[in-house]
Length: 158
Image 1: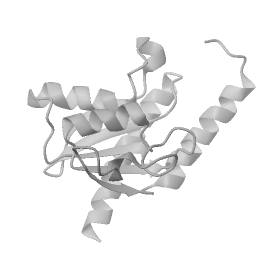
Image 2: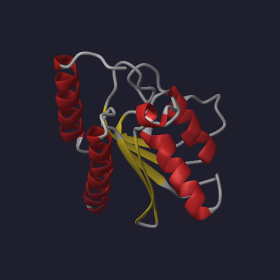
Image 3: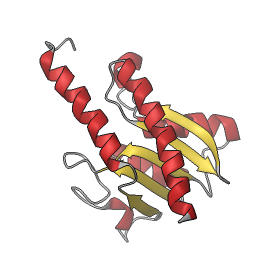
Image 4: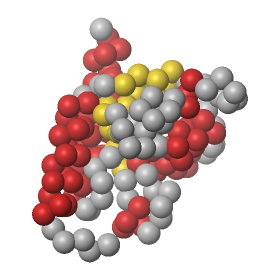
């Protein structure tokens, strides 16, 4: 019960990051990295504004955290993200040695933590992490659905 409350608290922080992305016109995905019950890294989607295809929320949180702790290995950390990670992001989480991943909404188009494939359970890989899903999934899904509904109303500018 205590862990569920903490997961909700940290996922709300990830949703706050997603809102920053939405305000910029980016797909509203946010992430935070937690160690010892403290947020030590934050990120949100910004590939359009940064002109960087790797600027997903998870990668931005990893970069922020790595700079703060002065290491690319983020041991004993949990990453909370509002959308199931893609292949690129789960690979980055593996390399950083993230211990636990918690995501809100499943991504049936690009998610690799059970939706399309399940890379964290792939036994041939050299790193494994605990994965939990569904924390504040409805809130994250609504944010994404509203974003894409608004986007469909506007002509494409990219």
